[in-house]
Structures are given as C-alpha cells and as structure tokens.
Image (cartoon, rainbow, N blue to C red):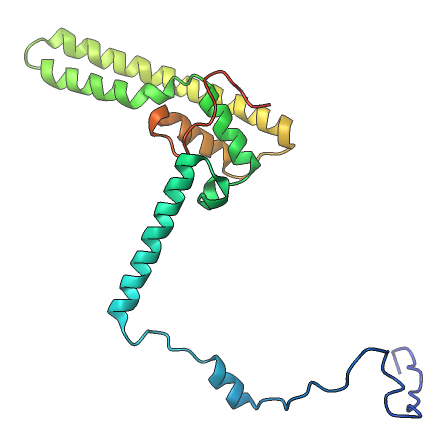
Length: 196
C-alpha cells in the first residue's frame, strides 16, 4: 500500500539455475541445536585449580614486563608498551631527549635543598633560608621551562603531524621531568640532535 511494488518472483525452471556459478548448495552438515552450541561455548568462569592459574598468570605477566623492559632499553618499538608506540610518541621522545631541559634536574635540586635546609636549620638559620630561596627560585624557573617546553613541543608536533595526539604533550612533559639516564625507553638521540 505505502511501499513500492515488488516484482513478482518467478520460480526457477531447473534446480540450481538461480545460483551463480561456483556456489555450492548447503554447508555439508546439519545446523547444531541451540543447546549444543551453547554447551560447546561454555567455559568455567573460575578455573578448577586457582593457585596454579594465578601462578601461571603471574609468570606470564612477569615475562611480558621483562620483554617490554628489554625492548625499552633497546629502543625496539614493536615490543614496547602501547603508551610508547607510534611515530608521534617517538618524535616527542626524541625531541625532549635532544633538548637541554631545566626541569630534569628539578628533583635532584629539590632533594639537595631539602637536605641543606634540614641540616642547617638548627646550626645556621641563614643557610636554611638561602636553601629555601634557591628552592623557590628554581621551582619558578622549572615551571617556566615546562611551559616553554609544552608550547614549543606542541608547535613542532602540529608542524610535523598536523594535529596533536591525545596525551602526547603530557607524555613529553613527564619524560622531561625524568633524569636523562633513568628515562625509559632509553634516549636514542644525542643532545641538540633534534628530529626532523
């Protein structure tokens, strides 16, 4: 009534005339009943031997972590964790590693200032105040350096890839805060050898 008219279906004259060449009729086996199909797919939610299953899972996780750690040391991207893979992440890593970052010495400076402040607090108040002033000045300088790093890295990534991948800039900033020797994946470029 409201739809278009369907053309009348004419029955085929001979069986098999309506099939294209090369198609075989039937699947060669009966369709399994629903109960049989569900029984074939049923697996226990909890393994029967929980201790051995947990031990096997721990061993598998440990070997996976070791394989990823070795890949990070070598620079082999195929076995790295997912957060370190891809051309954008590689570019961010190489660009941060090539840059001389003020923020990478932030944690050692904070530690030294904290030790000086705690040691000389009772002995010499001026040394403690100087350590505190150095700490505040270095914190402000590190924040400014991190902001500069963020905007320069964003401009470079957009120039190379057209857009910024989600999380890539934060990935570079976190990498910049790490001391160069302790970074994973290991740096693959020298200082001031910026990637193209």
